[in-house]
Length: 279
Image (tube, rainbow, N blue to C red; front, side, top):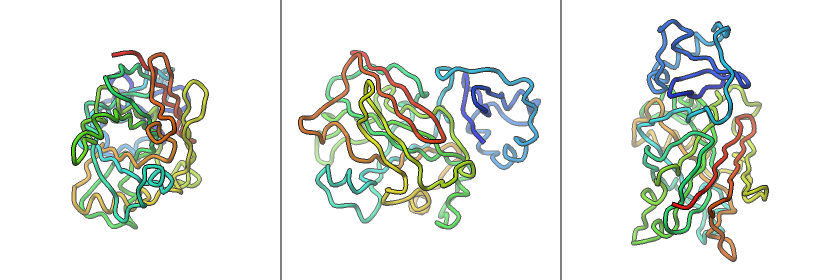
């Protein structure tokens, strides 16, 4: 099953067709994404028999993020060994966790104003929490996941690296710095949910690629470790880390410029497209 939002309302998606869940269920299910995820088992039970006669055709730029206003956004640093190496670090023994503030979350097709500084790219697979919970055992962790989607952890590196300790969360939360989507896909839809390929490009030049099987801490382990401390809530997002190829570790360094377009793709999910303009 594939889900997202259109005009802020929770929808199921099949190809280029979207079905408004609240309208199609005659109000039995909510229009709000978090409210729908709070009733995730009800959504899963209803969806197979849903009447798609009222579905509408949607274009890529009509999708919002699968969860427009998550209450918690977790992000994991250095979760791919080659990225840790290019950053000059040993692979971490424990997940390195920060947050992106929820106001930065946007849909899949956006125009981003570049703030002062050096704005970098970080393609990431994002887990959308459904049932959630506290102290979730690793063997039950996938049951907490409503879907997997695609994200970009856009990062302004000057502010990020200012101070000791640095300003990770603030520098990664400018407006538009958390594009997500276009849909979230339930884990059962993938042939191998722990081995998904993804890549990003700038104006056609591939800059990053990887597979989720290369993560140091997989989705299930991240959920177990995060929920050991924080109760995971329906609609929470977990940005699971980026592979090698970020701009500030290149020689010479390279950062996003006005007029460029960043395209990111995740197999089985779809595409993000960010165009950049001067702030």
